[in-house]
Length: 125
Image (cartoon, rainbow, N blue to C red):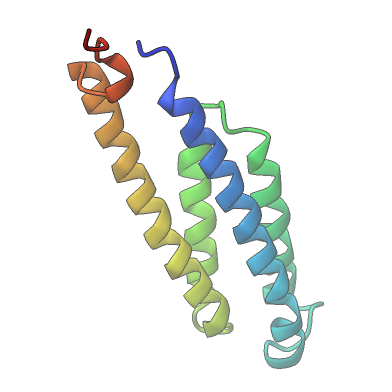
């Protein structure tokens, strides 16, 4: 195990992206109010619930089941494509980021297991 845990750093990145995504989804609420039939509709409440759930996920990042929950929240946003296409685009963009980030995490875990991380190398000298 390296002196610095790269997975701890990854959780920090995840928390930051979750907050940014929650803000982005929250900023979509006025769009829902104007184009989606209002905030009091199913779509409006769903967007608000997803934004709150994204913030709540920040506190649960140490749990092993949180990544599927985050991906499920992306799918909820994408499922709104019929009634709120703009919100679905947000879901697609963040889903692409999460898939890329998970690929990176898997690559780092593989390199850590092989002992190829820079922090695992002995200093020359």
